[in-house]
Amino acid sequence: MSEIKQNKLKLYDSLSREKRVFEPLKSPHVGLYVCGPTVYGDAHLGHARPGIAFDIVFRYLKHLGYKVRYVRNITDVGHLENDADHGEDKIAKKARLEELEPMEIAQFYTDRYMDSMDALNVQRPSIQPRASGHIIEQMEMVSKILDSGYAYESKGSVYFDVKKYNEKHNYGKLSGRNIEDVRENTRSLDGQDEKRDGVDFAIWKNASPEHIMRWNSPWGSGFPGWHMECSAMSSKYLGNEFDIHGGGMDLKFPHHESEIAQSVAANCCEPAKYWMHNNMVTIDGQKMGKSLNNFITLDEFFSGNHNFLEQAYEPMTIRFFILQAHYRSTVDFSNEALIAASKGYDKLMKAAETLAELKSSDKSDYDVKAWANKCYAAMDDDFNTPILIAHLFDVVKAINSIKVGKMSITADDLELLKAQFNIFVFEILGFKASEKSNNSANMSGSLIDMLLKMRHQAKMNKDWATADDIRNQLTDLGVAIKDTKDGAEWEL
Ligand code: ZN
Image 1: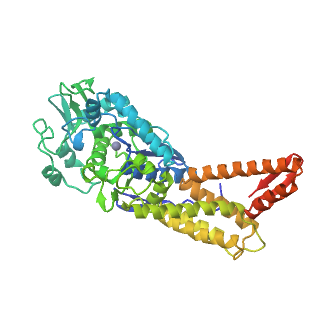
Image 2: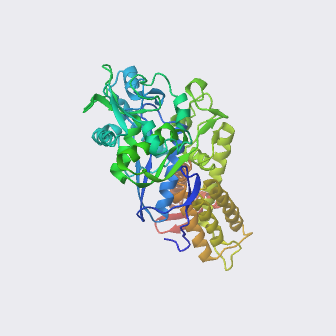
Image 3: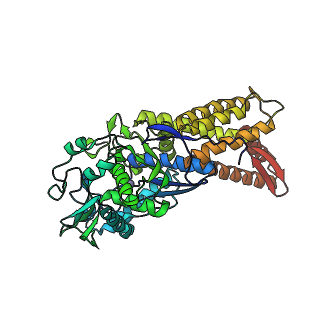
């Protein structure tokens, strides 16, 4: 641990709507729960954003020394079309269309999702539970809510009694809605004839005869309501009260609002001490949507295989671009912006290489400690990655000036700079040198080895002219050659 490390982290809590000092319930342990994907299609930008935003939270908390248990679920049952209480299960529908078993769909797209997150260098969570593997826990929670009087059974389904809950508690406190607004916006189709009130939501749904994914329960054959899985799995793995609950802003209502109500009804406490929500992505100023022809999967970004895309973009370009915005701001994707991000990222990676080769002298023109403190202050201010990146570019200028001799740095400062630069760039922001440049570095190394072999051969043949020629040309390219007994060693 570095001596300049500090811990004054403040994060914006979406529930109290203010930045609060982060104080875990049981320090140094931190429980982090983030709503994961519903696995019925390829991962797209809408998955990259929360994946990366909470990867930063995970990485930074670990860097500060916390022991983080990060739980991110996989929704493989119960998420009905239009997030409603009525309609087909998203996964079952895809399975029907593709003539596959629903679990085949869930497994296939879970694997694809993990591949995309790996490409983006998103660290895997500590636990990745599936909704379908926690049906018993969800049933138990439904029973508890029935026992507490905040739910009722109707035609084999169980509904949460929002009106009754709202008499004592506040349904709408997270999203800022009141139940009158909710009632007005409720679709008339959402199992209306079974509900006492349009605002009520299903915590257990009776399965119609054609519904494939179903389990026997005290209320008949059915499946859990979508919001139930996160309540059941978060309390199973993190306890009834844990530190941070995260997800996309679009999940505030009804998903997270309902999670709060379910936890209060079943466990007599709100689930999370802090709620964090990432903002959405747009493409050329428009919301992403299949009908708009701007629905681009991550694989399509990586391959460039989509009409909208002028070229392929490396995963690290996408990561860099997303982190150039604060997680609570919107991010607008365009080819122009991505090309600029790609250049910026290359500059940063080049500086990392230059830094490794810098030479120290007896004085410093750059205050490395002050710079590192500013970087920490940015991260401590609600994970402000754009400000951190701005500070990184500030030090990139200094690194380049030191390289050409316009500035100097002492050995101690250089050591600190190298350590902190690597911590911010690779450990906290999670960047990695692109495979393209790794591949080309490997390629150059092999070519140099090959030329030195030819030079050795020339020397054996007493062809001194060729041997000298190869040596001089490599020296001009910046390759330092040292002759040894068995051939030669080189460095750039
Ligand atoms: Zn959730």
